[in-house]
Length: 76
Image 1 (cartoon, rainbow, N blue to C red):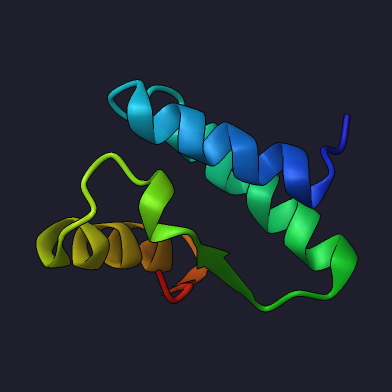
Image 2 (image 1 turned 45 degrees about the horizontal axis):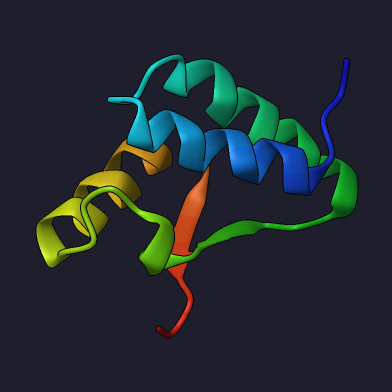
């Protein structure tokens, strides 16, 4: 089953708030949704992050990059 980009994004935020539960699965679903919509980077909403500080954002970018997803952050 392929998720929409909105569903995949929602699952990412839920996972981040649940101590990263199943995060790798959600990242893979996000990659699939992004590919199907022709999107090359994930624009995260910093207000929805569990750790909205510089260290938390850099850690998220690094972790996602290792799994093939470029992350940028929307202006707050």
